[in-house]
Image (cartoon, rainbow, N blue to C red; front, side, top):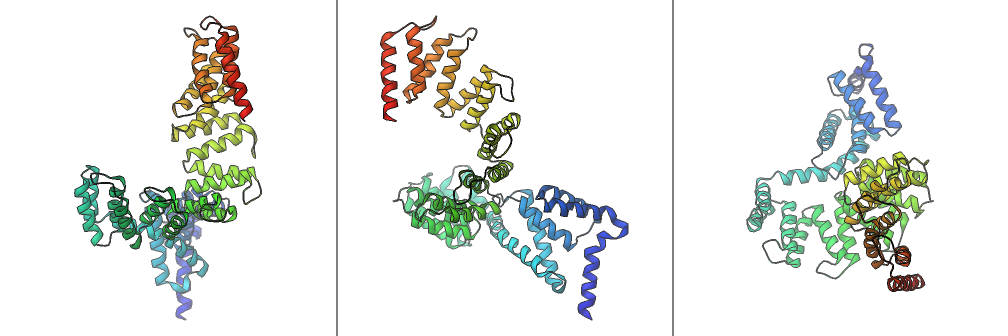
Length: 456
């Protein structure tokens, strides 16, 4: 009888929002369910927050869907994100309710929330460590570049079980801040932090062996530490394991296994893992080649503010791969890519191509050149050729175009660009107002061009 009454009470708590007196809440909840089914998780979350506002009370059904929507949109790499706080609080409420009303909870739903709770736990530990007074004082001294004082405070925090403090001490020794650079001491402190469950410390050990930083490269050792870090949800470690399977470093090359690890990273909201899944679909590595699927994952990475993700989805719209050609949309993605990361030289190049060709933009050699120059500033050598060619093909007021063409084309040619060499041959063969005809240089660049083409 007690069980029946308890169940009936819970049903009232769960379904109160859907009484005739609260049809708005019911409509919003149905909207949330529909949006979630369509993978529009932000829309689902918005509707669920409106349900709560209308109800002015907590209910398990709403909470369960809210937890799922947050899990899909929450970035597990950002401890301080407002959704972190929201998800942690919601999981705690749901688990507390479940403990007091065990008979009213659907086992499958409880399992789902429990699994999400396990993903949240490492973040709770980090928050706890960051809030310890000794760690805070150590961090304050570190920011002042008083690294010896920082070490003393971090050691006090370490003695209280703070693994993040161990990681900070290790980092000071690894980088040689104020103290002598000492990789052995760094590894000692990283290992101490890893033993306390600090995923960042475990990852840093793995990275030292992966890159061979003051030690011999050891992919097997790197994999061991990356896997330890992955157990505590370290997204970079999870992604790095996927990369090692993709590249066959320390393990047999296995894109299927790589996909498995990238999916784990993607489930935690890590933009690089999401991007890498897109790459697997784009190249057909471990999965059938599928540009539609690739566009989906590149788009998701872009939504996570991945500059590279925005670039890749832009390229798909630029060339109509898996999606219809849409130059305007391509430009919007390139523009977002450089807004997120102004050093993204490839995004500058592709934006330049749109301006140069008048694709979705007004044709503008000047705007194209400015984009290419931004790419050059960030190390792109092909753009040296593009700028040189624009100067050669267009006349610009108050600019010795041919002379500028030679300057950029020579820089590109010196980097081995054969098309730039061929244009220099053409320029020196005929000359112009700002550049004299030069048979010697014409012959010299012609020979270099032939030699470069023969070596390919």
